[in-house]
Image 1: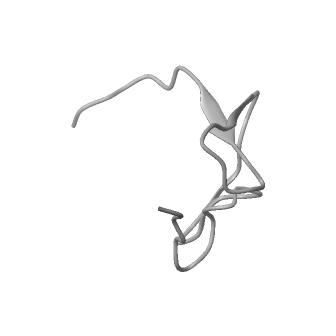
Image 2: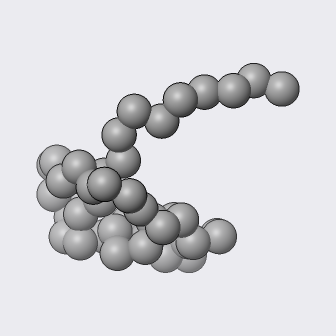
Length: 47
């Protein structure tokens, strides 16, 4: 088993190029990061 280190976490409530660094995030099983624009059962990206 490999181990890693998380240096930073970030999220954004709106679709944008950058996301704000957050002190912590909540991961939702099968959905992603709570409060992030990409969270949900289907991820929607803008091209």
